[in-house]
Amino acid sequence: MKKRVLLPLGGVIAAAGLTAASLAVPAQAAPTAATAKLASGSQVSDVLEFWLGNSGANLKAADPYGLEHKVVPKHVSTGAPAADGKPGIVPAIGDEKKTVAKSKNVNLPKTAGRVFFTLGNGIYSCSASSVQSQYHNLVATAGHCVYDIDGNGHTVDKWIFIPGYYDGKAPWGTYIGKQAFTHYDFDVYEDADRDYAFVTVYNGIRLDAEKSTAEKKLWTDVGRLGDNVGGQGLAYNQKIGQPVFVFGYPAAPHDDGNYVWTGEKLKWCYGKTFGPVSEASVKVEEQIGLKCSMTGGSSGGPWILKYSSARRLGYINGVTSLGGDTDNNGRSDLITSAYFDGETYGVYKAAYPLWSGSYVRKDGTLGLTEVPPL
Image (tube, rainbow, N blue to C red; front, side, top):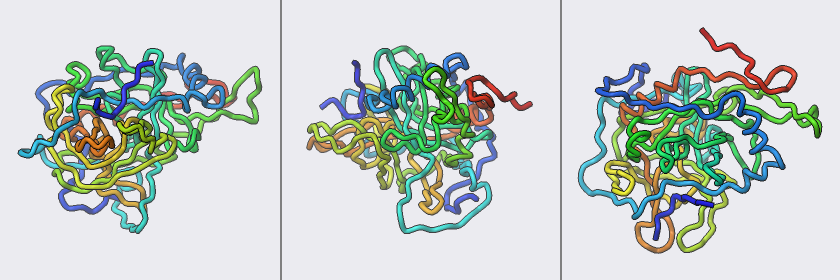
């Protein structure tokens, strides 16, 4: 089985510098977003059976997935990733109107979760988060957690998102990916400076254990993703050097073989971003970095600016892309993210207004039940 890991080979929150966005895309000289379908209706049953059958054995068997790179990403001491316009934000679900709340604790976000998918004969996992959208059905993750670069842009198979994943449990249901959006340069040129993706998902699904039989499984529609766990806001064209919280599900061992992480629980890092970070083998010239010991499996986890532990909300300003051991002590100490700029916002806006719908009928059988809104 091929394994690709993140390790190297060896109310609106009041905040200065943030400006609310009206979902008007900055002018672009060329197409920004590339899109591809993930699961069609005829595949939903197979996807559910693969992941939830046999007591979720395939969830436990998933290997951490990451973008292979030849050397440890390097912090370039001069310059910074370039903004392509004014700073902007989209408020989180529930924060469309300004609210104020404080907490001394670091409460984990309900929006964060674990992504599972297959690629060839491999079973893999990444991290992700629910993000604001018109129909509360959108997930932000890394581009390489959706698109198979080795397969020349083909999407991965059996893609699902489980928010709040914990020791094999899906407290708010399982959300099957419907359609993926990434930057054109990532899809076509494999440019990891654009290593992010936005995925629309169907309503959450849960097995109805009381009504199901050995001969026939019945399901329950648990509703839209954002209605159940909320959705982070989005920030772009922000200054480097601001503190962020990063959340993810690291699962790979460190280079020294130490298994600090299991992938079964959500973890976090905190610190100030720096950049630009470069690594030529994956065409990275201007990512941003953070000191953090997460390993493979944390790919796609959200970098949240202005995170409020009281509300468990903030603004996604990056997603984990690369990682490595910068001091050669056998322990990972760096993660990176693509810099979110106006083109990132353009990709996000392409996914923002799309409807997904429910795939559970009233009798518990599977089938698209809602009519797309006009």
